Length: 74
Image (cartoon, rainbow, N blue to C red):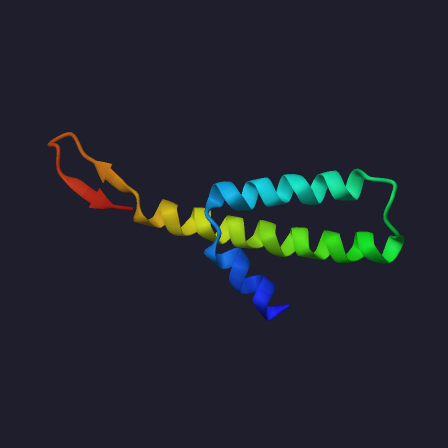
């Protein structure tokens, strides 16, 4: 589980979104058991949380330009 978490953290945001798409496709499949669906769902939730944290970090690093052309973080 910790190894999977490290893989998720090293993925780009785009790779994470692709992985989420795969999770959704797998959950929509009728070829998985209930137990598998719970495991896949949990990994999807963890991945979604990581994506949200990545987006938050990027937002905090974004710069804002004021009317004088000066840059400041927000």
